[in-house]
Amino acid sequence: MTLTLDNPTTVPAPAGPYAHVARIDLGDRALLVLSGQIAADENGEVHGDIVAQSERIFELVRGILEAHGSSFEQVAHIRTFMTDLDDLPGYGTVRRRLFPHAPASTTVEVSRLFKPGALLEVEVTAVAG
Image (tube, rainbow, N blue to C red):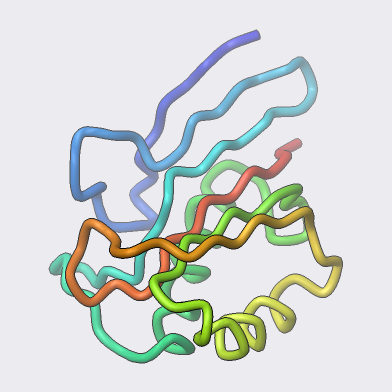
């Protein structure tokens, strides 16, 4: 078993002292544990409504997964932190379109996220290989 911490060039650098992904190699496969992603642009700013932020987050998640030879089809679990569960329908519309296989999921409401304007943060666990 080998652990690799990585910040792929396919996404902007992390906003703090953390890795975007922890890759645990297990022989011919790997487990990918992604850090929480918010809808930050290349300048670290967050804009848009729940749908726009959801789209941006999954664009970032896709970039991290693809950098490690994985895809949305190989996502095992999604953990979502939302500042308002009333936004769930907009988020759900984006998720259902991108994840027709409905991975395991956890969604919770939180009082706030670390970046002002962020409406949600999403963590993903996936398989590669």
